[in-house]
Image (cartoon, rainbow, N blue to C red):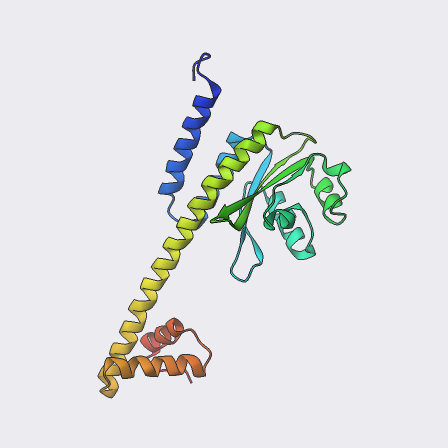
Amino acid sequence: MSLTEPAEVFDAGRFAQFALELHDAAGVDETLEAVVQFALHAADCTHAGVALIARGGRAEVGAVTDPVVETLYRFQIDAGEGPLLTALSGRTVTVHDVAADDRWPCWQPAAVNAGIGSALHVPMKVNGQTTGVLSLYHAEPNAFTVDDEAIAHILARHASVAVATARHEVDLAQAVDARKLVGQAMGILMERFDLDGDQAFAVLRRYSQDTNTKLRDVAQQLIETRKLPR
C-alpha cells in the first residue's frame, strides 16, 4: 500500500480477499480457522476465538488462536458465567479493563490469571438469530478502539454467513450420504426377502424405532454385517 492510499480502501480490499477465502474454505473447521486468523491481522488483538451454538443450545468451542482462549471458553461454559455467554444472548460485550470489571465474579480472576487485559465479544447472527460469538482478546486493558469494534462487527457478519453456508453444505452432504446408505440397505432386504421398496423401507424404519437408532445407523449396520440390529 502506498503512503497516499486511503486506509479505508486498503481495509475494503482486505475484507474482500477475506470473503473470497471464506468462500473457498473446504469446510466448517477451515472456515472458522480462517476467521480467527484474519481477526489477528485485521484488529488489534492478542488472541481471537469463535464459539458456536451447537444443536441443543449449548455453546461449543469453534476455533481459537491460542489455548488460553479455549481455556477461558470452557471455563465459562462449565461455570455458566462470563462475557461469552452474555454475548451469546445476542448483544455485544466489551470488557475495557478485565481487572476492574466485576460483572462476572467467577470469570474475572480466571481471565486476569490468563493474562487478559481487555476483551470484546461480538455476536454472529443469521436472519436475526445468534449462531455464535467472535471474541477478541488483548493483554493490555482499554486496548480496543472504536475502529477495532467496527472491524469486529464486519468480521462477525462475514463469519456468520460463511459458517452458516459451510454448515448447510455439511448437512446436505450428510443427507445425501444417508440416502445412499438407506438405498443400499433397502436393496439388500429386497433381494434377501423378496420385498418391494415400500416394504423394505418399512422394515428399516421399524427397526430404527424399536431400537431407538437413527435410520442411517440401522442401514449402515445392515450393510456392514448383513444383519439387522437385535
